[in-house]
Structures are given as C-alpha cells and as structure tokens.
Image (cartoon, rainbow over all chains, first blue to last red; front, side):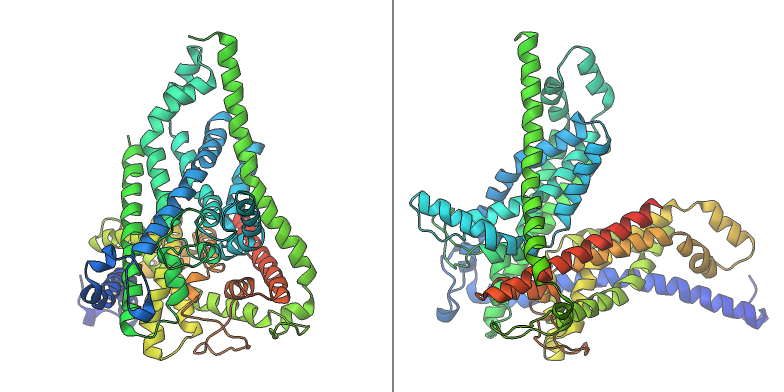
Length: 302
Length: 275
C-alpha cells in the first residue's frame, strides 16, 4: 500500500470518506448497544432506592398506598397474572383454531389470504382504540352480565380487561402457530392421510405432537406480549390498588399502575418504586421473549 | 377403532369448530370497525380536522393540534431512527460475523421486546428530567427507540437479498466502497427499506403508552419541539376516558382518522413490497 503522502488529493479524499463511512456505521452500531446497556443501567440505578426502602416487603407486602407510604407490588403482580392468564385461556382456542384452519386445513388461496388480511387488520388496531371500544361496548355488556348474575356491577375489572387482551394477542399467537404448523414435514402428514387417517386424526396424532414445543413457545411469547400491554388494560381494568378477590373485581396491572401514577408521582421514592415495577416488567418480558424465541429457533432448525 | 362414518363425522365436526372459532374471532374486528366508522364519520368535517379542542359543551371542537402533534412526533422519530437504522442495517448485512454485529443482534432482540410503557419511563428519565419539562422531543425519542429495531431488521434483510454480483461489478469498475454502498446497494434495496420504515411508522403512530409522560398532551397548537404536544392516540385516550359525550364523539372521529392513516400506511407498504 502506498503512503498517504504519495496519493493524489482525490485519492486521499476517497480514503478519508472510506474511513469515515465505516466509522459512522460502526459508531451507530455501538450506539445501539450502548442504548440498551444505558436503558438497563438507568432502570437498575433508579430502582435502587426502592430496593433499599422497601426491601423484600415490596414483594411480600399487601398494599400500595402512596399517601401512607405503603409500597408493595403484590396487588399488581396478582392483577397482572390474573389478567394475562385469563386472557391466554380465552385466546388459545381461537388462535389455535386459526393456526390449524389456515395452516393445515385450507389450501393456500383466497380464503387463507383473506384470513391473513383480517388478522393483520386486527393486529394493526392501536391499543388505545381497543381500550376505547372496550370502554364503550364491552364494559356495559359485562355490567349487564354482572347485574344479571347478582354481582357488583362494576363493568370494569380483570374479566373485561382479559376479554379485550385476549382479542389483542390472538393475531400474534395465531401467526406464530401458523408458521409452526406449516413447518410440519408434509411427508409425515401425507403418510398419515395415505394410511387412511382422517384430517382430524392427522392433526391429533401427527401435527399436534410434532409441533407441541413450537406451539407452547408461541403461547409463551403471547403471554410476554400480554404482560407488557398497557393502554387497553389501563382503560378497562378499573384501577383499584388492592389485591383482587375475584376476576370480576377492579384491579391494576404492573403496566397500568405505571401508566396511571408515573406522571403524578412527585416524591422521589414513589417514582423509584414505580420504576422498580418497570424493572420487573422489563425482566419478565425479556426473559420470556428470549426463552420463547430460543425454543422456536431450536425447534424449527431440526 | 370407531367406524369410518363416525371418524368422518368427528373430522367434519372438528373442521366446523375450527371454522366457527375463526369466524367468531372476526366479530370483534367487524364490531370495532363498525363503531369507529358509524360514530366517527358523523364527527369528521373539515372544521373538525383543522380546529383546536374546545371545552366540553362548546361546539366546533377539533383535533387539528393532535394531527400536527402526531406528525411532529413521527418526524422526530424518523429523523433519529432512519439514518441510524439504515446505517446499522448496512453494518449487520456487510459484517454479519463481526463482534459488534453479534452484540447488536442480541440488543435488538431485547430492545424489540421492551414494553412501550418502560420505553416511556426511559425517555422521561433521559430527556424530560434533564430538560425540565415534557416535550415533543422526548416523545419522538421514545417512539424512535420503538421504531429502530424494525428499520434495522428490514434494512438487513433487504440488503442480504441483493445479488453479490451488483456489488462486485461496482467495485470492479473501481468505484470506492462507500460510494458502492450509498449509490448502488442502498438504492437497490430502497423498496424493502422504505417498507420497513413505513411499517415502523405504523407501529409507533398508534402508540400512547410511551407518550404519557413524554409528549404528555397539550390543548393548544404548537410547532415547538421543546414544548409538550398533543397526538391522536393521547387525544383518544384523554377524551375516551372523559365523562363528556361530545368529547367521546370527538374521540370516535379521531379514532377513524388514526385507523384510516394506519390502513393507508399498510396499503402503501403492501404495494411497495409486491411491486
């Protein structure tokens, strides 16, 4: 290579641009890594006062009352688990049906592409609009049901939130399920059909056992998605800071308590407790997401 | 084993249940779209789109400031995430085995899964606190963090598909590497990259959670990115949870505008990617 001094000015410029270009690309990439490290560090540092202040009581206590400085995440952990598990239970039959129907039963064609389009539409509706629709249509309906069945007619609550959440996670779970089911080798399916099995028997004895791990991690991934969901849940869950006694009670999830109280929290320790909950949210969704995707990747590679 | 007719009946029943579940799922979709269109169409007029919000009870309330605010937020998010996203995408596709590239991939996977409300907290701590107040800038930064992984992914995926011969031809003609990338490879991947950007915009345009304590909301019109701004999703949230029927009416109108915007974006993305 010639020394820079021997190059013509034009070549030298090119060399400068060349170095600049690769440095910029590298800088941006490092920036992305630094951003994530920064996010983690920021949340950890800001949650530190909360660890010191509440200690283990944050997880074992029973109440959240900023006025009396009682800070415990338990009501919201319970609220989050109740809402998301219920939402999963409601959504699994639907997402599995769609995945099987469009991934196995129907041949690719107009109907499958229509189903795909409708699923995309469902996935494209913003969370806040689901919440608004829930507030004006689902809440009154649930209230009627509660009146009818002799419960306190809140309308809002865990059940309503789970109902709306289940609709929101179906597109996600269904598209993972469809991809997983499509990966079942066709010679296995064809062998089953050739032996005289009905399509139902192929699903029951071949497709389901084969894709079990993939389907389970799809469910896990939609669980992670549901935990982080904020707006729609915040609007219909009723915002009560106590441990819910039944699924028809108003409650709060981890994300909805942050959405409700973060902007109003003035006391630094109050803010730190809310960030602590953000940390719980961050860790659970990240762990579930990484684990679920690893399983799917491992499963689909063999 | 049960008789053949019984087995066939089970199969038919199973297929019927699957089809029924699929149809049932689309009932809420149709209901949501129906309510938005029926309630929203009545609210929308030229004045509604251009004038400012008014207190409940006064006629002539509008969502002009929210439309402008959303546009400002999206512009800020794109200004940050597009150059960085395309840059990192190029890096990942050019040096897939580089140590930094491997680290970036892990970071992206985590970044993509961070709940939007946590992104809001981050932008509050990083931008709102040091600046001393809610601002459009902090909202735009929060949205850019959500958009970034999508832009990077689509750039990387697109550039991987561009034939190596194109690059070799350009380099073989003596074109410097940086010019080959900026003038040949990136333009060749433009449809894919712009689809990614549009999908990124449509992901963040409907987001409310990261804006709650960053862009915050503002009943007035502002073009100053250092001031809080309103946005369509925040306006829908505030009006939907208010007890006033005319505000709720306006929320339906704003929902229709937002949905139409998002559907237009996905239509554009579809046409670009199928061309």
